[in-house]
Image (cartoon, rainbow, N blue to C red; front, side):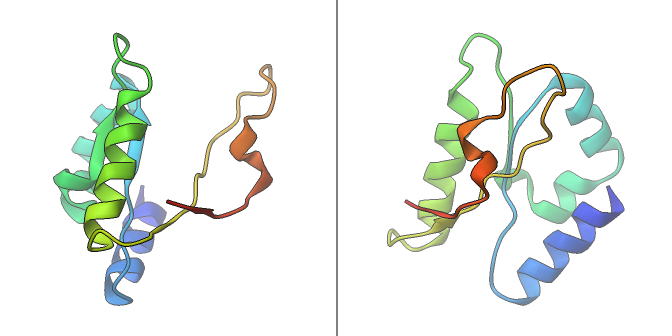
Length: 98
């Protein structure tokens, strides 16, 4: 969590933002207990919702557009892959223009 907090601070100092999305309940507890939601900004944290599995990502993209002033934003998706699951499309490491 300290590395993520440092990343959030570094991005802020450069006029950029860290947006967290699709964190499951146990991860959200850690984020909140560590105060990372305060460092990142609660408005930039979107937890996973079982009933709406794509909603957190949609909200994160909307927030990125807001932060970009309605213009284009660069979205970099970083995942922690599960060893037993196939790699996600985002594993290419490419930036996406939104």
